[in-house]
Image 1 (tube, one colour):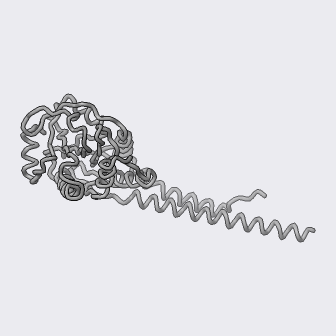
Image 2: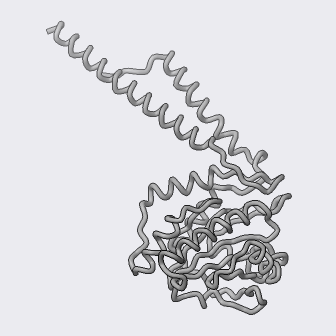
Image 3: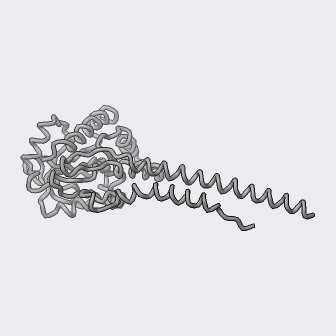
Length: 283
């Protein structure tokens, strides 16, 4: 039997769909967004998983050359910062510091290394990074701050899937910590201004135990999308804020879809029941 949705309900469904679509259309208007394309940034970051980082040569806080290859043999945590940032980078660095201190107590202080790379060249010189580390009290012997030559920053950032864009207030960039295995291969990207210790600790423990770093890809991907897409950069202040528009849109869309499915099922059952009764009367 062929049946159709009543015109009145069709108009209502179209109105609901349009209401759900309009916020998304507004949020993708390029004229209103001066920062990163967050979808593209997430894709680039995730594409780096499984990639072996090149043997880039950078300078440590004392101005001495250091190859990233020299960190192979142990797991490595890598973050990107710029020393001219007075809001986000200090916050994420403090969060990473608290997490690192906890991990050192649980797995041992010499089981892994940490590197923070200053990507804003030439401003993020070895001297600037040394002052940054001193200012925020980072004294862990397994944590180094490295300054790359400006010429290699694009290739270095691409290796790590790190995306950034200059703005009037500094840089809009992905808030991520990359976890590398002992061979220098990226096994996990962890996102957010405030890190969850378990998200760094569990992969690190797996690496130290010699087991593959496993994840629930669907759940992890959804969490990564929410963290990146719901973190909105203000190019005027250089600060980030959480925008709950995306979760609300998703919840609204899911609710609408479920409601329409229930309606379709009930309508289908009603039509089948009517057809059976009509057939019985005709018989």
